[in-house]
Image (cartoon, rainbow, N blue to C red; front, side, top):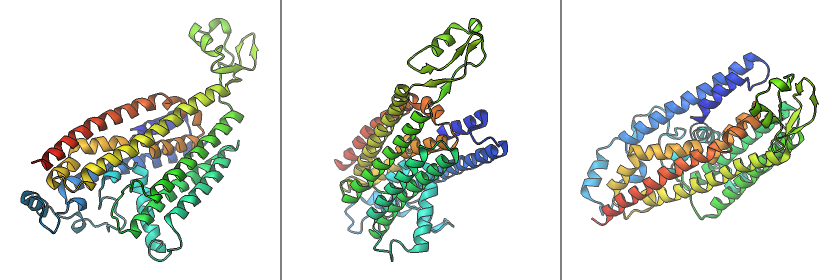
Length: 386
């Protein structure tokens, strides 16, 4: 997983502040989060395989096949065996979108939204607070965070990262409030509604603000490269070629004993790398939402298709694997990793590491989903045709 890669990178490159003790604390916390997410993924898969799914409950009018109804009646309900109340349990109501939401939002921010709502009764009593108002507010938070990301002071940039994480929490909260007021269980995308578009536009503005903040910081504080104190005569040819490349760096100072450390990445290169990463974010967002919409239509919304076949497709291991890929490469996961890089003062290292390789991950996720969509469509439609 990408999170494990970053844990190793933090340990090797001392990406945290100078205190080694602080670095160990950060690595430990990240390791705990990774283990927790793997643990929850395992139990989510077991919950889906062994217990009844709400959206596949047999209808009361008896129009579905008898075999389908009998099969689902024989399955126990997860609510009857879990000791964690379903009001805060992210495993209780699995949906298509729930399987494709990133780990942090689903397993951490989601339950926290439930707890906050229970404590303040936002959905039931604070009716003057609308989901759209929460969306507008997290845009305001994003603008403040973006301004902090431009600061030279690392503590200010870390505060900006905290604000962007607060923005992502509020982004989760607006959807939770909207679903609670409509008595919708589990994560769902109501494609085409006003709230859907408002939420999407506000998310887009928040991401743009973050990218602009990082761009301004890198412009004012360009990353530096070089080979301090190395005699020119001893440098390998490929290093000389890299250092003297005007595409990547601008030389500020050289000496007779070698090339000094003070070389910097050009602004053109910064725009190129950040633009490629932003392109990944855009493609990830478009494809992620597309497959949520397709899977919802095939498995949740098309009630004319056979329930047993839709249930079998939803509970299959390949579907869990395909949706699990989107947990890693969806736009929220990219933002979490970027936030971690900014917090650790390794923004440029992260951007250079993923500005090409991230596209490969997207290709794998899209290819897997396209293959699966064709198979699921054939499977459930053939069932509807008898």
